[in-house]
Length: 541
Image (cartoon, rainbow, N blue to C red; front, side, top):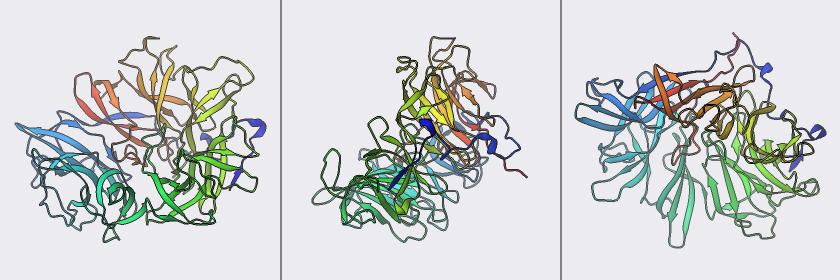
């Protein structure tokens, strides 16, 4: 089931997942830059245009979290005013001219696009589902009545009308009442596939269900449901699914996005331990609803090693699966039993340990080792990156503590370490936190949110938070920091690299051009959506 990769002399080898910057094509992309996409007080695109729904003279007042796709489109909840008229609406379309799709107060849609339901009361952050079409969660209702949460899209109607996919209170195919819609994700493929998870109530118990809807489906199809029978080549007998975790965000990388599922069988649901051939497993579900559950805990390989814990997996663009796993057996001890694994042949239960606990970080002074790891992020060109904590080994005993024990590893070396000098910051300004990591397609390396230690080297709450990343030389640079001047305005604060409520697994904030979008507030109290252009691979011509 697993075949450990030897690490020469115990030194961390990132060859399996990373390439050095020298392998990238030239010419080199320009340096990082930041620009204002929309700002409060500026005119709303299409204002005054017939059938736009936006009156002449409308200006922006504020913005929700932006989402982008790989075709140059953007979607977000926008707030505008025109004289005494104010509105909250979902916008989507090209960045130069996004259209207003629906707004608060407008009648909600049913499953055929007929706007005859209760009016929209509020919106969650919208997301793309392919072909420039969007999905979104919204609350509808009338005054003094409880609001109803529903899932909507404009992807499945020939005239791009908004239709409902599911509403809390609906009866599903099993005759159960949908109690909650817990998470949702859109896959940007030809099928315009939307997956979403629900909690339902039947006569006996609450049941969690993962659903799929797409262009080729005339109705919802269930993918996983508590109580389903699970069969696998890894198991001698079928087992029953009692719980699953799907469409969740990753530890350390909430904005990266996720296309995979983590499941538990009825034979081992923590903290219960039952001696059986099966246990927890990691799995995937693809765009057409096929599921694969072949990497189980408690199923030993030829060496007698087996997983005891499996983290939430993620998939690389080439289909490889990556996850944090813990093993026990003849080849492992408590000092090296947790690592990051990848599987290039997932259907056949083959997983490889790339690096993990106990490996030495050779480019840190003092032969320091990995003590724990967070979920990795994976790129299509440059490899992977992950956050880890470190521990002393052999030399400089006692020098590692909570002020300096967190590292970001990428591209074969340590890209950033808590408690050390932050690039492009005043001398003596050290990283105090590294909180969120993404790895956009075509980027030379990861992009991460970090905070500097305050009250040292002129660092205060007004200039401590920033975005760093790796440039075309492989060096870590600061791309943006509080206090920077952007478009003639001074940046007061920003919200970036965050997961969105109820769609935490959606990769919304970046696109394949290595552009990252986020919200900002300036010292003049205006708000904006900003675009960070990350240094990225430019194909040779």
